[in-house]
Length: 490
Image (cartoon, rainbow, N blue to C red):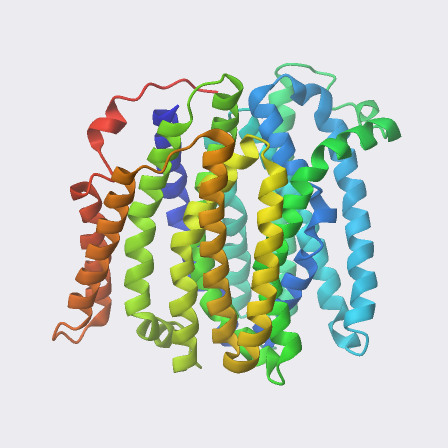
């Protein structure tokens, strides 16, 4: 299982490294630089606002489905049509809730109502694609899922590139164009996912996609939602503590849109590196679930994934922290020192977040949701309190500090839960390896940063490459360990 994980994570990262960095830095960043100041910040805030209702949009179906299918693939034929009907009904309820709360919270800002509606449609498409992909990965089609994960961004790159540089229109690039481009790319990706599942089903049961299969059974709906609501609560609580900051910035500050713009600019880089955590989690969930069902030890896979992800996360986060101001001035035409400060705090959260992805996935696969939800409740309280006081004093920088503290609190909490619920050990040897590795990474980046050499880009890249190489010296990556693991594909 470890070797299967390794093969797929290398394939997945390779595919996404070709696509997503170009989108984030070539397209998304260019759009923010092209739009008037504060406009992208408005989009970032509105996306966060609509995402707060994601519990209704999904209700835990994606994680529930991925976990169950990886353990019992034969359930696909029976439950997919029924779950899809439930999913579409939830999408309508989600849209209704967003529109009602828009009328309450943005009562006097009628001009942004169309934006919220379009963004809500995109959230529905995103949720639908994630559900379809949960079926694909749950059925063990990992590499197909890996390719689909890059498809949406590939389509978005093509569409936005034409709109940005194709000179099709005399008017300058507009925010609505970006949102509509997302609608087209997510819609086409969803269609591809559906066709993949249809082909998979046709190879087994020709009658699977008859319309008679897609029926609404109230008792079945209630039964399924009772099983998915713990997963839904996880989604809700995670959404609150990850998205509330941008909404609070925009609502609390007189220059809220401009500060949200600053926060979004720095958050883009965190989103870029978080791709790796998302990829790890997507592969690990069905693998963890499969091992737990067979009552096999997940400790080797947990240790391997933690060492692999921190071997990359620590050098990348520390290196970016040292060169935070240079990076922001390079990327953004209106960057200030404030941009660098926000990035500095946010990028350090990547160390915590990358570990959270591993332990969250493990706890979800084990269905240890109740205690994890209590951890999220305490985290939200801490995050909102910190945001309330720090945003007033330090604006976007305060929100970044609150995020950093909250994420490390969650990481330590999930490590404890993984130990008490599943028996996962974070032994002293592994602690010593990681802490020593981190200390050397800080020392090397400090020395490189203050070298008497003018080109900071070379220093930044050399620092990351050199520190990543240290992972082999500290045995976070051991080729011998990877070669000896047996593979059993789901």
